[in-house]
Image (cartoon, rainbow, N blue to C red; front, top):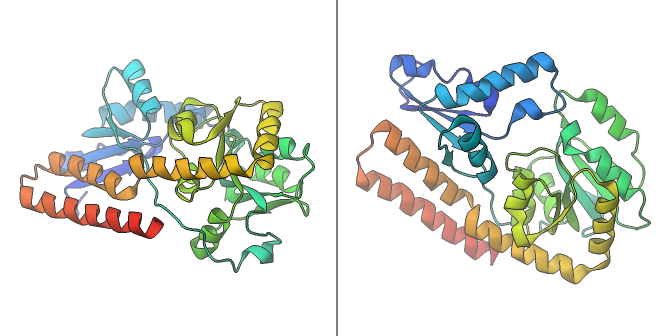
Length: 309
């Protein structure tokens, strides 16, 4: 509240409850809604109630409200009669990373299906394990993530660990790049999303993606990936079998995924969109300053495209 900043940016519903306080001393505030957190299965009745209040707060308390998906934007139109600013999450284009860590985990490049994200019930990791265990394949299943107020659920997942099913802790840095870019297939079986960063990262790496058919996932993959019927283990098994058997389909989907990321979800363009909101809220009238920022981001975007090519 007492720093020299012009704009304070809050992410997720819970923090939206506090977005009014900087406004009391003349600052502008922004809330980005990453998802309807009160719907998450891990929260009890009281927590869900507080998060429902936070959804109301995300409309009424900040100077501006952003959402990361068109699905969330429509929800705010329907439920709150407001027009939030659509600025999606982003990612970068990635090449296959040299391996050093994989074999320590007992993995080979192109030899595993990957899930990355929070181990939380709405992510449906248990559904993915159930579908995978019905398939005879040398391809392994890797789940990488960590607990998010869901220790009992994580313990249940770890009971399925074997030579074929690997449950890893949080992975970051070069190990994350290596694990992500060398996957055969990325699967996101979730019941609830805002706009999955893990899905975007997999698509930016050119990995074929299979997701549940919730609107938030379909919005991202469109014709650049595959979906299965939400919560249906048989349909998930069917799609896993299909994609494991057809490398040409996976390769074509990976190319399309990178093209889609390039067109809609690169961080430099996302940063430019957010910068425009900040400048408007702060009353920045310096066209030159804004032009310099945009030029810098555009140059970065072009270099990123050259590296990917």
